[in-house]
Amino acid sequence: MIIPYHRDYEKIAMGLLSYTPNEKKVKKLQHTMKQYETEQNWQLYFWKEEEAIIGVIGIEIEENTAYLHHLCVNPSYREEGIGTKMVRELEKYTGHKLCSTKSTSSFLESCQSQKE
Image 1 (cartoon, rainbow, N blue to C red):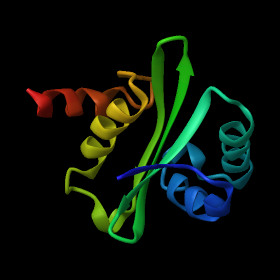
Image 2: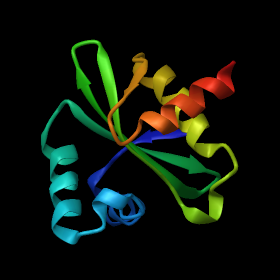
Image 3: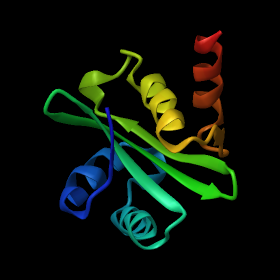
């Protein structure tokens, strides 16, 4: 289930985002979190199954387009199709079709091929 980010879960979000190759350095990770917390068009969401938050997905909305910047799943839950579920549910939740960025293009392409 998709749930919006709340500041109370900042450490969980940072922990999940740290699995992203571009977010390994603490300063970069702090900058990313500040973007999601202060810029209205940057939105962060969690993926929750049962009582556990196991993923995070971040988008930037420009007009009617949502760009996928981050998608991270706890390594213990990878290879189960959770990333694809997150993309589909976020598209329903926001009403925006997700577009890729340079770093997310191959993942979104694989989600599209799974839909067909």
